[in-house]
Amino acid sequence: MKVGYLGPEGTYTQSAVEKHFGAVAEGVPLATIEDVFREVESGAVDFGIVPIENSTEGTVNHTLDMFMDSPLQICGEVELRIQHHLLGAMDATDAIEQVVAHPQALAQCRQWLRENLPAVKLVPATSNAEGARMAQAQQGVAAIAGNAAMAVYGLRKLAAGIEDRADNTTRFFVIGGDQPPASGNDRTSLLLSASDTEGAGALYKLLAPLAEDNVNMTRIESRPSHQRKWHYVFFIDIDGHVQDEAIARALGHLEQNAQLFRVLGSYPKAVV
Image (cartoon, rainbow, N blue to C red):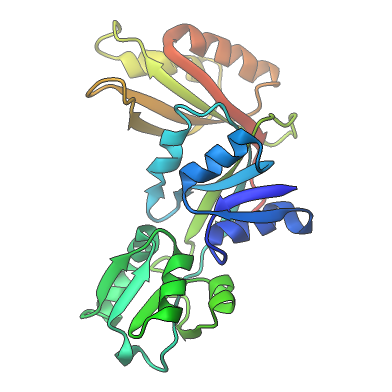
């Protein structure tokens, strides 16, 4: 089994692949989130894993946006406790001129960096592993990454656990072509938009069937629809599986109210 993930080797997304699939999968590092979607769609890999949200910094918008045009299903989720370390090839932090990391990692360590490295330049990278690769190759560059990147790129741990929140966790989606059966502890993700003719209270009217059918909504995000300016779609998570009788009934009512209605996937909740 081949699983595409946001690379290069040593990213937290690779760790999510290992946590979810174990030794049965061959991880395939890819340059961008879009590449992960495209490789799964083409059949070059069997599944993909992409980050969707972080408990400190919120949603990964690029992942959400890909679902607007992709036919892929969400077929699983992974939650990974993220512990950031300051890594480098130097012996001490006073030799650091730049810290290179993914923007989310820089934001998750904002307070620590401000207090401990106030004069150091912060440089965004496409991934934390890319930052680690630069730290290996360039003098004066340190990275924010995990133990996997430290091992891959042969770096020293200059400071451990520099994330600002002890419960810092990232959620990942497993994407593929098939929907798994109900497990008894599931989540369903939806893509919706309200009718243009509803006027005031359009979102309330759109979501009313969830409350009326006693369905628990756990998350809602809005994103530009890319159809016209100031027009939005909503990404929603609810508890339950589309094969559950109560969920199927609620979704039928929801579809009647929506201009756009799409089930992105029903899948087992992550094992923390």
